Amino acid sequence: MSHRLYPSITRPILFGGAERELAILEGTLISALLFGVGLHALTVAIAALIAFGVHPLLVLAAKSDAQMFRIYLRSIAHQDLYLARAHPNAPDFRCLPWPPL
Image (cartoon, rainbow, N blue to C red; front, side, top):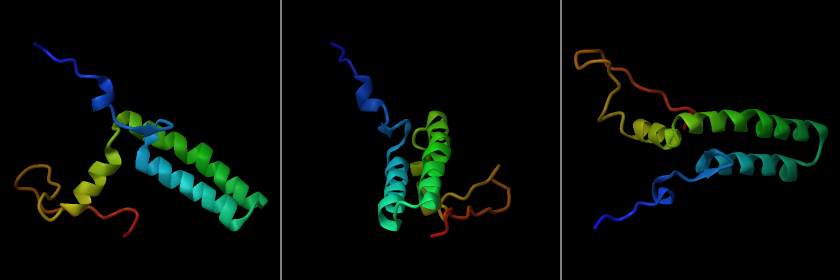
C-alpha cells in the first residue's frame, strides 16, 4: 500500500515569495523605519526602496534556492570542518560572513 505524500509537507514556507526569515527581517526593518523613526519623506522613501527594491531580489533568490540563507549560515558555522575547495589539493579558502557578525 503506497501513501500519498502531500506537496505541503516538502514545500518550503515562503512569505511573499521570499524566504520566511528574510521576509520577517525585511518587514521588521520597514516597520522600525516607519514607526520607530517616524513618518518623514526620507524614511518613507527608504522603506519603499526596501519594499520594492530588496524584496524582488529576495524573491528571485528564493526561486533559485528556497533555502539559500539557511545553507549560507550553515556553511559559515561549519567552515572549519568543510572548507570550500575546488578539488582536494586546492589551497584553503575561508568564506567571510556577510553581514559581518
